[in-house]
Image (cartoon, rainbow, N blue to C red; front, side):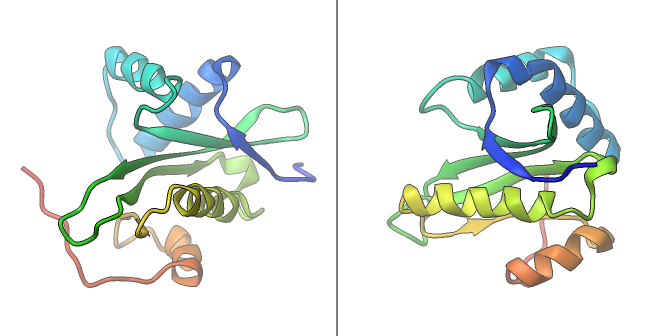
Length: 148
């Protein structure tokens, strides 16, 4: 049981726990990535000033039990960069305990510190559990995503 939810930046010692959480996140979205993507993403997460950036939540032992990745990028619609919250995941054993909210709020703070014009993210329309939180702390837009 997680008594206190702590959020912090990802650290080098988190590599294995991060990979486990990100694999579970990708599995939830019915995808996987080759090892070189994990290696490259981790390397960028650990490089100051490089995108993406990441936070984790930790349990009382200090083990990561949630993660979020976010990216700053330019936009034609604003002068300041915007922040894309790309990945958000809480381990099943800590869901319903505020992990997602804490991680999103950490990204909000990072975006505010960077003077970003805003924060946005996407989810699947049927991800009703997560959308219950998102509807409380964000604004649903009418945009639909297309990919190639």
